[in-house]
Length: 124
Image (cartoon, rainbow, N blue to C red; front, side):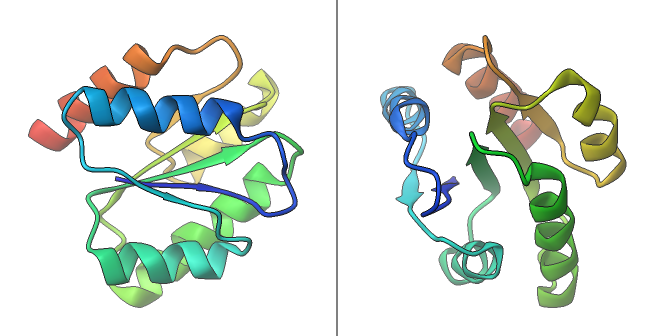
């Protein structure tokens, strides 16, 4: 599992908490502070992760998700599970789903929900 947070976004408490919960549940987690989606895609390829999670708290999640999916296709890792979380307005969820974002975990979502979702998808 690769979890990433933009360098421009200083609100990292949620993603750090999620990483700790995932580690405690037995997942292998790489927590990254890559600033660019290009770097996230490169790290996912280099680390050969099964899941990519990106946390957003200052917007830009639709454009960044579109760029991530495009880069993943170019790098041959388009089949990886992608989740996003943070401050995601409900109105943006359909656009994210259209971009093949597998899971969206906005404000109020629990770490347990994300872990259960990932386990179900990865083990399927």
